[in-house]
Picture 1: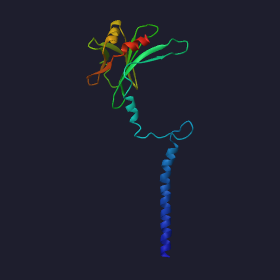
Picture 2 (picture 1 turned 120 degrees about the horizontal axis):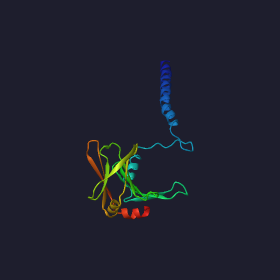
Picture 3 (picture 1 turned 90 degrees about the vertical axis):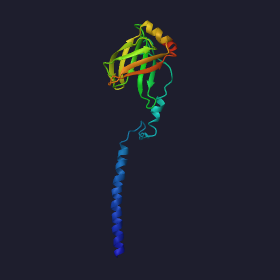
Length: 197
């Protein structure tokens, strides 16, 4: 009789234990129900930690040179083209500087728009320079969560220097007043510019 009572007590303890385990196991399952769903209603696959670093590595190797892109606001609107080059951190794939040059259809004067990282000294401003030429000041326009933007019109002599030059440097100051120079090659600048003018 004692053995049977022990078995009943052991069964009752195991039942209570399994109920407790059941609740513990159900809690994560209810969290899984709250996971984002795809358009078909199935749970979206969770991102694995091993997959996350692969995306910055892919972004760290952009195609070299100046990329040309054209777009239009509508079928009737004129086609607007721009050329762009981006400098990224090789370890993280984070954009450091993005340079966009376009020729607006209304003014036909080339303009440069530069995206700078957040956290630089606004009073220090931003400049661009071709090889060892004179640095051209850019006017700071606005900042958002992706960075700050500076722009300037490109004078004819500066445009000629960009076409014939080897390297363009974009410079700005950190909050510690340290000047940062980001070099961008100009090898195919003239070819890309001919496509957008």
